[in-house]
Image (tube, rainbow, N blue to C red; front, side, top):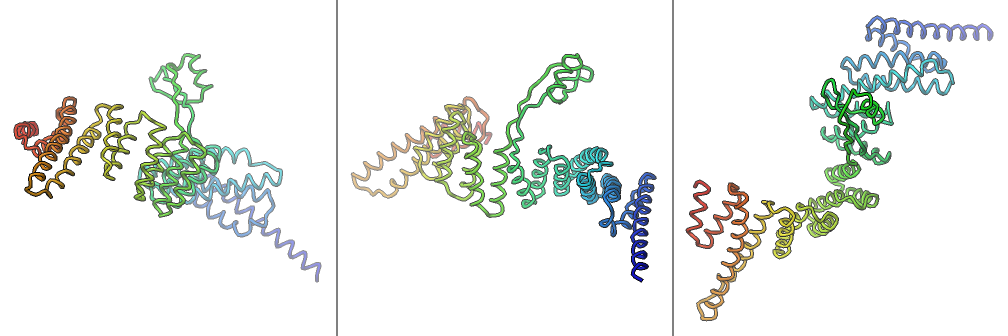
Length: 420
């Protein structure tokens, strides 16, 4: 009886093996005939027992399954792409472990083609604002081709656009872990026949130039994206209310990139969003020391100083910005405002004075000083008006100053210039 039982078990396994092979062959035949859905159905019939098959059958099953699901994905079934990636990777793992590489080379080629299909589909998804789907496909592209870390970078960007901060944070952190930089040189040249500028690797570009098929070589420098990635990580932490982690991300990045002024600016903006104006101002001053010729930095330092009532400090920053960029309109307007605000501050004291001789003398002194400050504010804008005669912001602010000074002649002149 025992012998007969063993024979029956053996026969059972043989029948299962034959069924597997039959279903795999049916799937292969259906796929070659252009019926991917029928091929999928046949593969599903074999899926329940494939784990017990030998390496050769497993590799064949996953090789065909990868092709079927890649085809379904290309035809619009986004979820099928994941199954294709899984099966193709299984082929490589199975054959690597068994040492028999019947399908490895062709699988690698098909994975490269699948990567291109995924990227093209992701581009379409982004164009149609299906950002989450695009992010998934770009991440799969990266998994298929880990050397192409730019796919991971674009996956993170798509996730951010789709508002999926958890996913984007995962991708950005992975970018940091692999040391993604994103910078480098783009090598371009103009195709003589078409007149189009084309990008290629340096060796190919140089060969094309020598052959005469291309001209006007360009080496275009692409800046590093490390600071941008850290900034986005920190912004996401801020978005989800984890400011401590955002600050930690900036500090860690600045240790690695101490000369990157953009990291300092981004950290400063984080503190500004947290309403820590002192820390913001401190970091902006640090950034200004790193980039002394950046007019925007000095302007922003002036804005915070003015908000805090430090008019002299604000004035110095606006003057520095105008020294760098004489036509910086906002700096001109705010510089003028520092004088007006200082003059308005004197009005408060003037209104508290009585009718005594001393009070009248003090009132006249303060009024003269106030008028001088208003005049300085007006002079700043009169100078600005020479270069920007049609700027409505300058004209309006200047009109209001003359109105406050009681200078009716200039007040009417400005009203006329404004078309009022």
